Amino acid sequence: MAAREREPAGARRDGRSGVAARARGVFDAFEHLVGGLGTGLLALAALLWIVLVALTCVIGLGLLLAPTVPRVVRSVAERERGRLSRWGPEIVALGPAPGGVRAALADRAVRRELCWLLVHATLGLFLGLAAATLVIDAVQNVTYPLWWRALPPDDPAPTLVFWDVRDDADAWAVALLGVGMAVCFLLLGTGMARLQAWPGRRLLAPTADMDLSLRIAQLSATRAAALDAHAAELRRIERSLHDGAQNRLVAVTVLLGAAHRALAQNRPGAQEMLERAQETAEQALAELRSVVRGILPPVLTDRGLADALAGLAANCGVPCRIDIDAPGRCAASIEATAYFVVAEALTNISKHSRARHATVTVRRAGGRLSLRIEDDGVGGADDRRGSGLTGIRSRVEAHDGRLTLTSPPGGPTILDVELPCGS
Image (cartoon, rainbow, N blue to C red; front, side, top):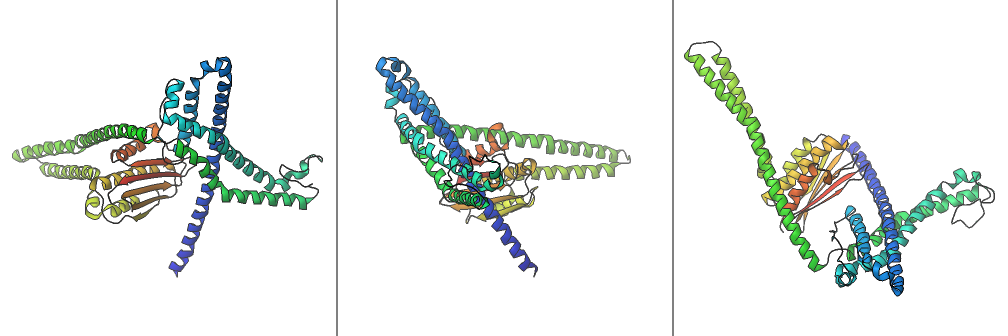
């Protein structure tokens, strides 16, 4: 009976989480479209500047202004790269544009940016305006029956309504139109956001030759980060041994020496000293075990990643659910990195997020181990401010993995990590 009663409650929770996820997706789509509206306006301004420079070339003034065109185009394109990187896979920044018009036109990346500029200043701007207009008009129309009587008699209807509003029935018809507009955005908003972002993801990504150069630079940076992380780990282990176990072992030696002298001189208190030495030795042994577990938890070696993560979830400061579908074993270094990522993320959630629930999802497919750590806390996490997330990123990138953090103010915080683990 109790089991039957729990099932509907679980189904209701799943239903509520599904509705919340859908609402969050629609809100994200609107936010993406409004952000694209901002870069669309910048793209339109840059396009008008290009036209102005081209027209003034007739009188010679445009020749002096022409070198600014590549810099303007690159500046707007970098804004879009940053925007798209915040809402999905990162698009690497390309740095300053080539100096001079001729060198810029010979650069394939600049030519692709010009194509993107034309598309985003038209299609992207239109989609952003359409989304903003649709949502604003939907809210206005849905709430219209509440305030239409306060309007002047000669302006009895909101925008996009082509009939006279003379009574409550007409006002409720306006509200019904608003509901229809809201439903349209619910159905089309996500697709509009993807369509708006598609030219940027296709045209602003590095070309093949540039991608290779950036890849070499990225590997050099991740190698340096891996060495730094290794050095930091060695310093942590040394500090743990020096400040903990070593001091206690010194205390054991002192206590044993004092007990030996007390026994030799038949002084009282030798038994108490031996007991204190035993307790101190046991504490030193416990600290040594803690250091060893920090290097590579035995449960990870003996029982695998699933049981190790289940142990982390059980000790988490907030209720945490583990969902693992990762058959087989990965390399020990990959499993250790995944364990460290989850451990550090759950520690951050317990300390800073004020969350009520957390979820860890692990999947293995296509030679990649995917981790997702999600909480319903206050959000606002940023790995650029020197938090523990910096160490997570260094460890992940050292294995040629990828980390994506989404943490808007108000939450939720979602940490996505992908690690190569072989086929």
